[in-house]
Image 1: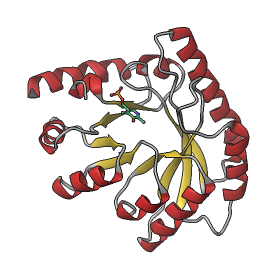
Image 2 (image 1 turned 30 degrees about the vertical axis):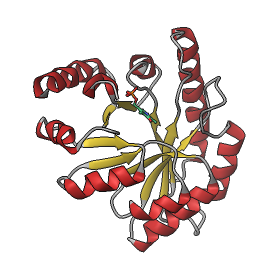
Image 3 (image 1 turned 60 degrees about the horizontal axis):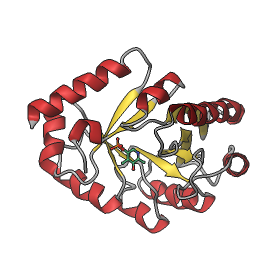
Length: 224
Ligand SMILES: *Cc1c(COP(=O)(O)O)cnc(C)c1O
């Protein structure tokens, strides 16, 4: 088990190396023992998509782990993780940002958040269109109400397809939005520097399109 995980980590790290990107090891549904293996191999940035599961793992594991919440997030769950979460990837509403800001303030923290942009052709995936994202950025921009969050980038998920041209097109469009929205960078609560895109099946295409954070689970830890 440990050797297999180690080999798969190494192979992915080799692929990421030529790019300036960080690996988020997606550990959702995996037992604590698997996270311990990753930790002992030196990987300490984990992605989870359920708050309760992330909290349980946080409590059981060493405190120098960085926890990224990567899935859809309900406002009423923010309070359980506001004291430790390193980054929230799937932010798709102003109301959610208000709640994150409120809970971060209680802990005297600034929580980095990524706006999730809808880029896929399926209508099942969460996310904002570009007009909605702009509207949120305008509201946040230097607002004294939003001093405990920082919008540090965008996140997106490509269509679930084998069509590499389609995936490439979607990641290119996200990167373009990313660059266009950087006009909102204000040196305060908006600083778009992270582009979270790419999973096991498509992270190489994502890297070629400027991803800075790849979220890889099953090709390291096996199928779920
Ligand atoms: C599960 C998940 C991943 C990782 O998926 P794999 O295909 O296992 O690499 C990445 N991002 C999000 C938002 C996820 O929910």
